Image (cartoon, rainbow, N blue to C red; front, side):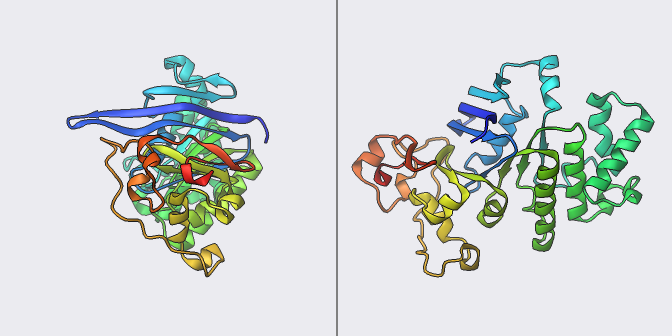
Amino acid sequence: MTTPLVKAVGLKKYFKVPAGTVHAVDDISFEIPKGETLGLVGESGCGKSTTGRLLVRLVDATAGKFFFEGRDILPLKNKELQGIRRDMQFIFQDPYSSLDPRKSIGDSIGTPLQILGKLGKKERESRVDALMDQVGLDPRLYNKYPHELDGGSRQRVGIARALALSPRFIVCDEPVSALDVSIQAQIINLLMELQRRLHLTFLFVSHDLSVVKYISDRIAVMYLGKIVESAETASLFSKPAHPYTQALLGAVPEPELGARNKERIILQGGVPSPLNPPSGCRFHTRCRYKTERCSAEEPLLEEIFPNHIAACWNCR
């Protein structure tokens, strides 16, 4: 593996609510080498999107460290943080709600340049034109507004805006889940082409395993605020070790997996509340392999296969 561009260590995010404390992200660690994509998957509410927002400081962490090129950026404030923001950007899930309906497409893409780029009006307009061309947008859309574009074009606007300051790391938070399937393929291929040409590093958050399989070099599986398994993409799909990962893969339509005899595991019950996570292994309440140890002791992530880790007492 090459030197990691980003590295999270013991990252936590707890939210105080009237009923108690939500353990949204609870002590997770991972790293992403330069130029690679880490796919982060799991059910809704497992903490995927919160993880992405923590990394770019859209929300502040409760505890832990996050290193960007070896520098812990979580303690940074104000001007120190502004310098880092050029290198880290975010592509939002809903391309309509993430754009200001009162701003034209050109103004939306150019806003980062106006705030942090310190470019004159003509330079800014020239840069926006180049960005629109880069993501496949017709320059004639410059003065159009978000409601005048289709979903795929709006997401291209979001991508262009994320690229405005020439970042090196981008968090893609379910960037195709709100789009038609045919448009999804176009956007995924665009992201991969941009990554190749611009040497970008991605955290790709999604619940769609078929999409994550296509774009990711490595995949981390989250359950109730914890990473329960992480491996290179081919290894995760061919040798899923954690029962939760096995259940997720079993739910993917067979043509996507390329295997017609995969056992489909039907999970019993719902995801426990993050207000009061289960003791021991958080998955034990839904696991058919659970033992007394699973409810009493929390398993740590350990190597099961080469470069393939899982947190499960029964995987060892």
